[in-house]
Length: 447
Image (cartoon, rainbow, N blue to C red; front, side):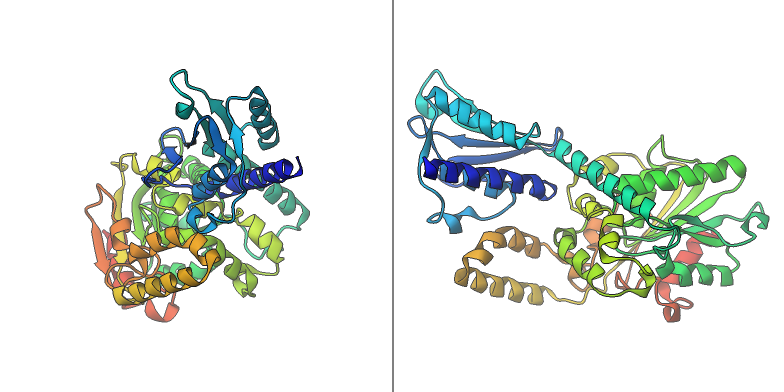
């Protein structure tokens, strides 16, 4: 009996791990011979289905654990000899009470049930249903409550940078025929990093401001906030037109505004996107580690704020979920039509620092490490899949963060490919005036 409880405890812990891994789930193709575990993803309903086949009416506990490991894109083969033995007899009524106990502990978002068959015992199976959308929604709701509560306890201005539109003094007196330029930053960035760009626009006789937002919260939340502020501008200054100049994820935030009927303020006439991850970035798969590094070291641009607050205020890494290729956010956004009242421009960079040979060498080193360590082997299948297509970092194919092929957007003819890197694009004050990218952006603004 003690072993049974130990097995059940392991399964519950694995299920909880699945709930935490849900943002990383993707459509998996599992075609192994005589494999008792099948994983399917319904992208439309955001439901994950795991079918665990029975053998003479029995389902192995190890198969249940392997199924849960696979939902996190982990390779269960390395744990084959380390998983618990024993089976769950699907023909016993008591087994249904065992499953019922699991469901009570797992909550309503993860459901396990026995599917019986009148034809034969072997046709019976255990079906695990995971509602990824509901889990994601609950995580985001919880993180928002935590974020808001922490903000309320911190005095205004102590975080070093206020969120929202920041426009220059006297902008209201600008010529009514002049378009107001607003710079929108991207992921793990801030408006202060683009202040030099805004100042350079001023030097070119263009009135410019910035929009700042918690850059790691859900992209839709950032778009809603921008929409509200732009609608307020449109109400006060109905004849004022606006051009958005965006960097990286800022392009997605802005598109979520102008391509959504309920968000569109109607006063934007130009959307100039630099390095937009239109179809995501494979580097979002590594965002958690990047985010830890981003907040582990002092950054004067973030001001005097605790590391804990910095992580929570940025949204607990939620934007990275939206940035993954094939994410629910990107599927919905890219299914929309371009706004016919707006001129779109896209600039994509090819200044990646690595060559294809570098990536292949790294993949070989990874395979060597995989043979030497069970832990590495557990995580490498998904990592190798990412590395095989990581054009984001390859010179000539990406800018170091966004691949050219994932930056292009259907319906945008004004797309130009230039030699720049993602992290330097429009952010180095010594490389603005006379820079090809800066001059190309100016040309679009002056048309």
